Structure formats: C-alpha cells, structure tokens
Image (cartoon, rainbow, N blue to C red; front, top):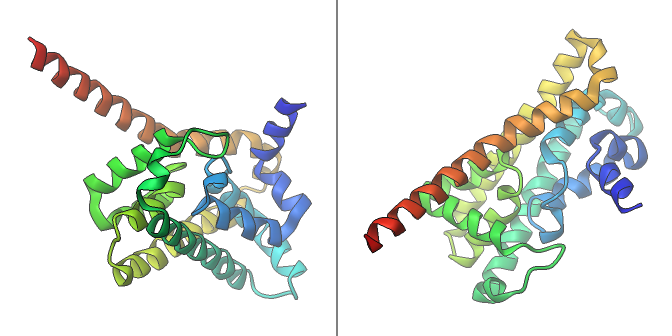
Length: 218
C-alpha cells in the first residue's frame, strides 16, 4: 500500500486530474519552501500542467491559460518567501534537527554548498534543480541574504521556471498530440534530465573531497 501511495504521489497527472488547479498551486507552493515538499514532482508536474493548461483555465472561470501560469508562478514565489522566513527565524536550530521522513539534513547541506558556490544567483538556478529548490530559500534565510535581492531573484526564478516548463508542455502537446498517451515516458525523461546533473555534481564533489582528505594523510 505504501508503494502504491508513493507511485501515486510521484505521478504528475494524478495531481491534475484529482485536484485540479488548487492542488497544483499547493504542490508548487510546498515544493519551493516547505520541508514536506522536497519529494514532490515539480518539473514534471509543471510540464504536465502545461499540457492541460487550457483545461485548467476553462475550469477556473474560463480565463486565458497565461493567467493560470501567472498564478502558479506566484505560488512558487510565495513558497520561497515562506522558506526564507523559516530559515531566518529558525537559524542554526534546523541544522541540529534529527532526520525525519519530511526532513533530511543531507538535502539542507547540499543546498548550502550549492548556495555558497553560486551566490545569490542560486535563487534562480535552484528552481530547476529538484530537492535543492526546496532548501535553498531556507538557507538564504539562515544566512540572512539581503531581502530585496532575494525578492528580485525569487520572482525572476519562479516565473522563468514555471513559464519554461509549462510552455514547453503546452506547445509540444500541440505539435505532438500523442504526448498525452506517453506521459509516463516523458516524466521519466524530465526527472532524469533535471536530476542527473545534480547527482553527478555532488558525486564529483564528494570524490574530490575524499581525494583531498587522502592527500592530507599521505
């Protein structure tokens, strides 16, 4: 039963069909600033949302699908603001927390390393990196990043992320209608494309640190 639930939660189409726009907004909000959101399918969900953009717009007072994209981008902005606020208020406390199902310290440390290496632009870049995007705004709050700068990059990052993913889904589904019948394959490809660079980056980083440690003892 647990495996079935896990498969359901990782299925982007399920969110669209079962919860519609409101569940979609909550998922994007949660994945971009709450500990509980790190496992949610952000990129693939936005891509699938782009495929169903017109249906979502029709259900919400029959507005233009562009308006739906703006709403979703704002949900991402709000999520990052909550993450920043939590990081600023909690500070070092969150680094001493024990691992739970909804909180993994290794994800927080990975986000911190990414932030330290890329600076303020991390707020934009992290939007396109699963897991990292959940914890980066929290790290920004912990280090008390300039609020005006955070706000600017927060808006830019969220709108770039949401519009690029949703427009890709929207236009590709128009060009290739068969995409709707191959969503599982598309989702796997998106997950691999967005996740592999992160895995490779930190694997190489870990290897480099290990080599440096060996050199110290030689």
